Amino acid sequence: MSGDFTVDQKRYLEGFMSGAQVARAGRAPGGGSPATAEPTGPDAPSLKAMARTEAEGKKLCPEEKAKREEMGLDAWPRMEEAAREGVYPKGPDILRWKYHGLFYVAPAQDSFMCRLRMPNGILTHWQFRGIADIAEIHGGGYADVTTRANLQIREIPATDGVILLEKLVDLGLTAKGSGGDNIRNVTGTPTAGIDPQELLDTRPYAKAWHHHILNTRTLYGLPRKFNVAFDGAGQIGALEDTNDIGFQAVEVKEGFGVEPGVWFRLALGGITGHKDFARDTGVILPPADATKVADAIIRVFIDTGDRTDRKKARLKYVLDALGFDGFLKKVEERLGAPFVRVPADAVKPRPEADRMAHLGVRPQKQAGLNWIGIGVPVGRMTAAQMRGLADIAQNLGDGDLRLTVWQNVLVSGVPDARVTVAKAAITALGLTADADALQAGIVACTGAAGCRFGNADTKATARAIAAYCGPRVALDSPVNIHVTGCHNSCAQHYIGDIGLIGARVAINEDGDTVDGYNLLVGGGFGTEAAIAQELFEQVKAEDAPALVERLLSGWTAQRLPGETFAAFTRRLGPAALKSLVETAMERAE
Image (cartoon, rainbow, N blue to C red; front, side, top):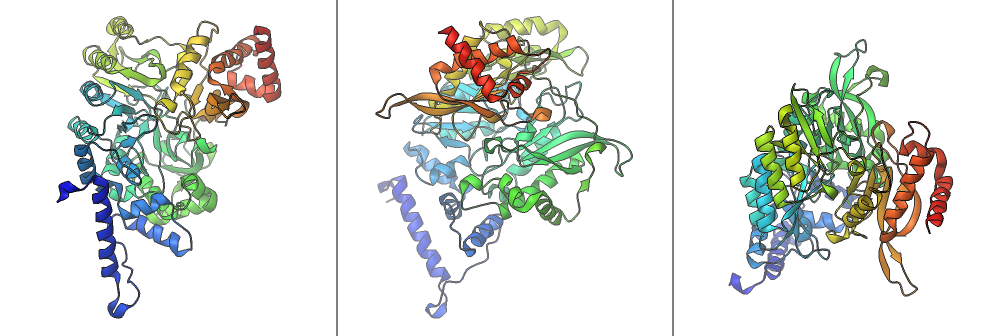
């Protein structure tokens, strides 16, 4: 009989029968009110949080109801069945499939996107080659490096999602929890363990947290997504201050009542799409305690996060409601011990990141070895390029490939004598190993070409900006240009020196629109953290490259000695800067 029903029909019948059974089981003897059973097991904390929300007279958002009906992790058998029948998920199942790393991205593409997870963004050459094979056989033949030092495979047919996930496991990888209301890919310093200036190798801590997540089901019951990053103070930053939790390696001085040496400083509440950076809590902890502390923070978030409004269901809003001290007190209660706190002057200044260090050849802490930062335009690599990079890592490096939040790849462990050969091999792949200031700063999310939320084709615009500005502006230092498609801000437009956020631009009175952007300036991160301010709105995509070029040319012509682009835009202010650009564009016409 089962062959007579579609997947949707079977799902409806399963839900109907399940509801009937619950109603019968909950009916009290004598026809009284249903008895409410206390939730137990690893899902209990999230179920209790949902129940408390309703007991307060509030309504759960549809996503919370869907998770209570069936947790995404339990949907695997139905995913297999759907793959056999060649159908994509509908309704709440779109969210459930994300728990396994499969995103149905229609209408942008009638296909799946798979987002992987790899702690600290490090892959072996054979894993990299294996992903290339998977992308070619089951996807569009390419992979995208993301702003979480991760990879995405796109254009996956309905029939291939499950087998793709199984093949990732065969490679020692997974996509579990890379989407949905989960803890996303764990980022760390890309040059961990090889960086001459790092205070701490973040790899063991990122890996420990990664495996803790995978093996702790309770941590999948979040109100919304959650980001954690480990920064070891190396030359390439992990942008940990844009994460919900940022673990920052710091060196504590003598004379402050704690053991001097390297600790993690705890920063909380980063979500730059909502215009906030993670803030220093004054808390320091031994690096070995990072997983324990992160677990406690997540569990408090499960208990206290908003389950009625998806826009407010992030840690930032819990911190806004409880205050940092109130939230940390709850974490301490869960840990059963107080945090160690030190004043700001107990911590030595951290080494500054180098905004060019993710491109070109850089010496490692290991004598005679180098990492080579490879420019990957807007983060996209073909399967053939990936296999070529894997060969370079295997034959000329130490066998590892490292992804960065700047959407590019590093090959590490290249001996001095092999650098020239490696660079030539990289060039032969159509990529570059040269430290180009313009390339160094451009990042772009997937945009309208592959995301249903995108208002513009961001990757095409980023390429156009690079092509237009490259021959017209000689940059001697990087300017971060972040092109994002919507207010989810996957490319973090608010922290860019120049940020572009997708917007539909009207072209006539009939309501027809074209791709376009609102343009912002003055963002920053790290010690220069700042939220960019809007300068122009409703700019057509075709006009964006010239507008960016005018901004860059204005800076190079009128800056003070040593003045960065961010400092220049902040000194002039929006009105003067806008006048400068508009005058330049009028002259060009």
